Amino acid sequence: MRDSASALGVGILHNPVVPDLLKSDPGMVDYVSIMPDLFWADGGPGANPRFSESESWMEFIDWACGRYPLVAHSIGLSLGSAVFSDDAYVEQLADWHRRYRFLWHSDHLSFAQVRSASGQEQHAGMAVPLPLDFEVLRLLTARIQALRPRLPTPFLVENAVAYVTFSDEEMSEPAFLNSLVRDSGCWLLLDLHNLYTNARNHKFDASAFLRQLDLDAVVEVHVAGGTEEDGVYTDAHSGPCPEAVWSLLEEIMPCTPNLKGITFEFHDSYFPIFGAKDVRAQLDRARAIWSRHRPR
Amino acid sequence: MSVASFQQALCDLIASPRLCRALRAAPDEVLANYELSARERARLCDVVWQRGMSTNCSLYRANRVTPLYMLLTYTCRSLGDQFRSLLDEFWDAKIYRDGQFSSEVERFAAFLRKRIADGIVSSPFTAELLEFELKLNALRSAPRKQLLREVKTLPAPGPDTPCRIHPLARLVRFHHDPDALLDAAERNVIASAKIPRRESLLALSLVDGEVRVIQLPDDIRRALDDDGQFLESLTPQLAPALADAGLLVERRNRNKSARLFMDA
Image 1 (cartoon, rainbow over the protein chains, first blue to last red):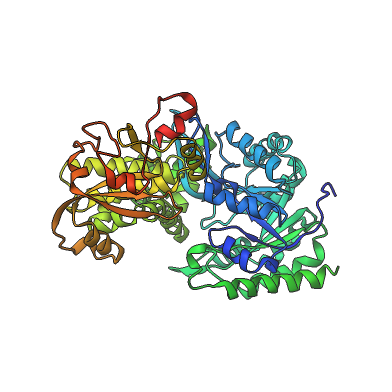
Image 2: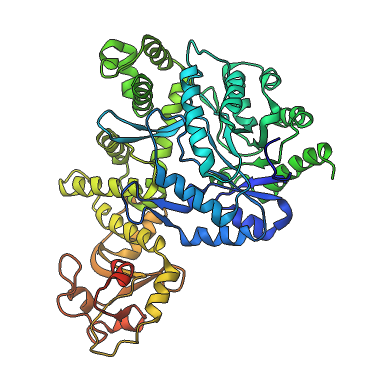
């Protein structure tokens, strides 16, 4: 075990309605997951100042950091990009670690940013999954190895949701993740809803996937809900977790000795339908599972 | 280069259902623009037939329209049936650079201003709603506490003191009745609304923490040139309505430390 952070329990991923939820019901979570990128406007490389923090959002993080343990879940590292590096962005993340003492840092196993042959930057508009090949594994390993010394906490990668599959891949996803953990020294953020979404759309057995995965590497779990659109189940974070996701969580709990927290995610645009009581019910259910497997 | 080119091609496909269709019809023609291995070519030819590629294209469009609809809601509503075709044109012309809301809104605003100037936008309300929302967004993203601290260090202006508008306020000109216009935009009936022409000037203020809209008298409007600059030195005497609302602050010599204050 390379990580010294203690187990936290149940957390929530911050979104614009979370501050009011927490202020009215502070005991609903044990920790808060923060997407740092949403707290600032990024003027891009060369801009001065490069990062402008949003005053109203900063009020929340300043309030929360005195009350809850915080973990960071960034969306801008674009770990899988073939050609991309942004030292100023990494330095900004490192600065936030110094300020807010995040217990760990996670980002996604995907790419979002590309740079054309002419040097022009382009955003994919979504997190794009990667082909599971050795070449990609080497690229990710080198990038994570370069990143880890710059962020002072364990670094986690989140398994991706993928609406398309790539033919002729060299590795299975569990084998790819196990190799990445071994070679790069990263940990896993196991998003069970991403796994459920992929298993449902691409018709494979999620439990068999989990049996092949090195569950010792899992530090955080994400749970969420989704919706079916035109025959494709999407990771929309639109409401309660499907029963199958809770079952997967029950399955892994006895086999994840390094798990520190279960984070519930929902998108604030669904909050008018999926209200405070529903959020609380999801967190309570996660807590019941956590407590059953991690008695104090 | 091959992985980079594969990722570029995949991004281009996700951004363009039209390109996906073109790849289905003529793969050699479309993929000639990329340096790909045989396996990467085969993967791209395969993904454009998968149902999930439509989901990717929809996600791209939803994620790209979100900042526009969130920060330029009234403007988008005013475009009515033209919104879709203008979006397609904007997305074809301007790549999604960085995923940042503010820069995407700025790029769309510049694109829309050009279309308005070219006479392509049919709504008579779009131009003023665009300027209104851009100024509102600028206020909402301003470092309010810092600006208030800086204003607090300034002495209260006398009647003849040269002033400028408070950094947490903006003036917006309307050519149609602003109450009716903003009400129709709020109720999402702006695309078909008939609103009488009426020249007016509003002040938007975030000084108190909430956006306050103040209708200003005609004499202040007439004191502005076409670019919204005051024709003569702005003083409390020239614009008592602004002074009474606490929206005039003493004009000071520009220096580096006051840069943020001046730019607001």
